[in-house]
Structure formats: structure tokens, C-alpha cells
Length: 257
Image (tube, rainbow, N blue to C red; front, side, top):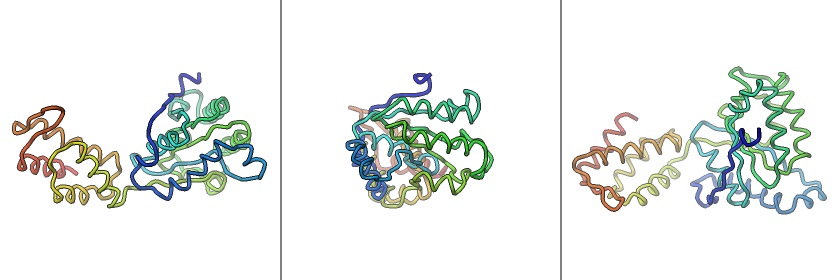
């Protein structure tokens, strides 16, 4: 069952590959010491939860940050889709299945994507049955697993305040202007296409309140337009085009944003 539920991921990502979120990366750095010296933590009564929540809209970098964290810690990441757990007997049994799975692993990150989907669509208070079941399981899980558990949520409001008091929550939002600029500039450098500063500025303005995933889609659509243009040539894995074609492709894609 564990093999069916989990995908093992080993990536070379590091924190340096993550644009922005400097405060979050610093806050997560304690996990390096947790992995290296767990007995020291226990001996000195250092209270650091190995269970945490990554909360934020889809596409804001939660999975990417978890992969980078796994790279920093030099441990594999086990990726579990909450919907797969849900299909195995409902939310209460699903929570138990997930906790039992997590107990089997050590020195790794167990990443449960869209954990709030496990609960359902309604807004729940902390005294509801599923939340109570998970909290009871959680109390035992902290002692019985050496894995780092990351639960992602798109809508943490489904869970009550007491739940959040027990589990540290790291919030992910839409990238700021400087983060969007860095993200787009990196794309431009890799593409080797002659984007002007004005082109980059236009993309930065047009992607306000957009997730990284949405910006990635916009970028890909621009490249698709260029590849399809009769005025472009693909040579040595590069797109060679003229200024007018580039300008038109950007305007066409941004016209649908």
C-alpha cells in the first residue's frame, strides 16, 4: 500500500534555487539540526515540531520549497496525494492510513499535497470528528516517526484555530514584484531570446497577483507563439526571431491575461 500511495522524489534543488521567501528559508533551517542531532533536541527539551503546514494558493511554490528543503537536508521526499488517501475509505480512515505510512519512514520528508481536500468542502471547526481524529493521531505520530511531515493546504480556514496552534504554519502568497522580475529574468536568460527591458517590465506588470504556475504558463505561451510564427527559426535549441514578432507574441499572450 505504501508504494501505491507514495512517490519517492530525489531532487538536486537547494534553497538558493528558490526565488524569494528568504524569511521562510531561514525559519526552516532549524530542520538541518533536527535531522543531524535529534537526541540533542530531546535531551534539552527543544520543542520543534516535525509536522508543519505549507498554506497558500495553488502554484505559489509550496512543492518547490519542499523539494528544496529535501535537497538542503540531503534526504528523499515522499510525495503523497491526499486524494489517493481519500479514496481508501473516507477521511477518517484516510488520516489513519497516512499516519501509519508516515510512521514507517525516517530521515525523509513525507509531503502530503492538498491535505485540506482530505477533509472535504465544508468549513470545519476544531471539534469536528475528522479534525479530532487527526489531532489524536498527531499526538502519537510526533513520538513514533523521525520523518518530517509537510501538509499543504490551499484553504487553511477549514481548520479551527486550535489546530493551527498545534502545528506550525508557513504561509505562501503570490510573488512580489522583485520576485516576479527575478523569475522572468531567469527565464529570459535561459531562453537566449532578445527580450528588451521594456518587454520584461510589461511581463512583470501583467503578472501582478499571479502565482508562479500562472507566470510559467504565460511564459510558455509566449514561446509557443514564437515557435509557431513563420518569422521565427529554431536552431541549436534556440528560438531566433525578430523584434516585431517578439513584440506581437507578447502582446497577444498578455491580451488574454
